[in-house]
Image (cartoon, rainbow, N blue to C red; front, top):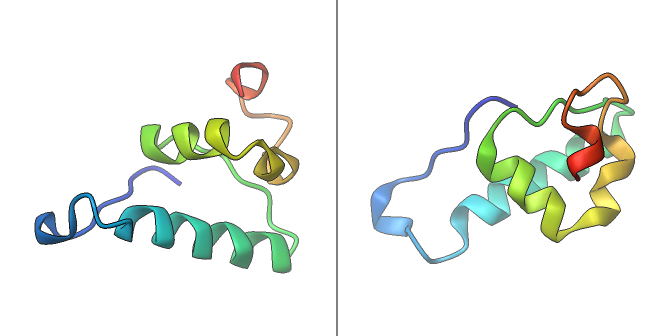
Length: 65
């Protein structure tokens, strides 16, 4: 994931978080690994370390999560 964006009117309402969570579930359900280049996704996974399991071990920031 390289970028996460929602309508500015949705700021602070959990929309971006919902999009990321739904996407992570999709990736997990389909055995797809993730490269979290998007700073929002990276921060989301730091706050929810249970998702670290789907991060590709090739991701250079893996140890920072």
